[in-house]
Length: 54
Image (cartoon, rainbow, N blue to C red; front, side, top):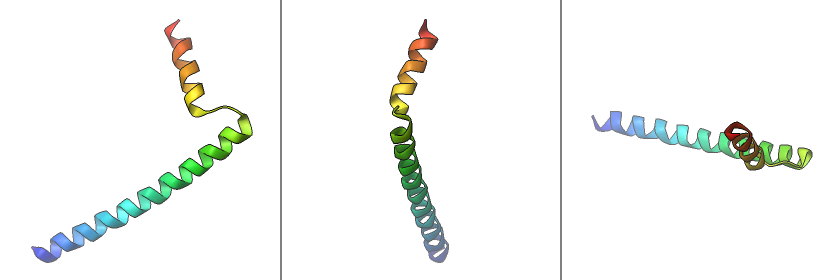
């Protein structure tokens, strides 16, 4: 039981590291896109919500 718990914990820790790495890559890609387009994701989301509410 203890060994299984440790194995599950290690697996979850590895998944957390992979997810954090993907999040960092996404944030970097988002920042580059925002710099290239001159628009932020938040701005586009706000505009979309405003357009849909009319």
